[in-house]
Length: 217
Image (tube, rainbow, N blue to C red; front, side, top):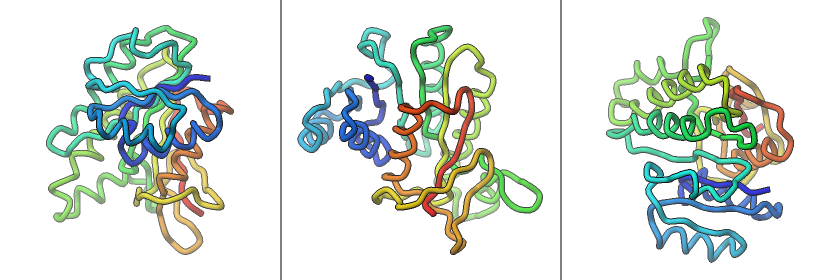
């Protein structure tokens, strides 16, 4: 089993690299910073690294990967790049039945409340979110784009409302389209939990051309 992780030095990406390597999965970690990739390799010696802009990646760069994980994170001012990269990856692997592509999405595309409204609508209604709301808005556009793709084996994962560093939770909640809360009313997913559910889905495929969500119980 070989996986290619785009955005491997970010919060989600580095946690996925660590989890996959610990389970004996062959990992090729991709990012733009040589220094950050080398630091990642120091802590995960079995991995290979590739310093290259995600938008310059070509088919040959993926080295026969079985699964590609898009953990790319864009700055709010360039949030549209989330959609652009998803489009690039889908275009590269149209009708390729041997490769799965995983996308780390946001909580904004989940449903919440008695009326099942999108979480992103609450974000947009909060005046303090002006500086960063473009990220969840474009992650919603990314998911809507993926939902139209029926000739690539993709899956997406959304965290809970709060996506933060931290280890895997002892117990994990799972859902599909609705925002999750634990029994204490908290809606949180740690990076370790995200990594665990992504790697589990890679090893035990359940979702095809669908998005699911996971949260710390």
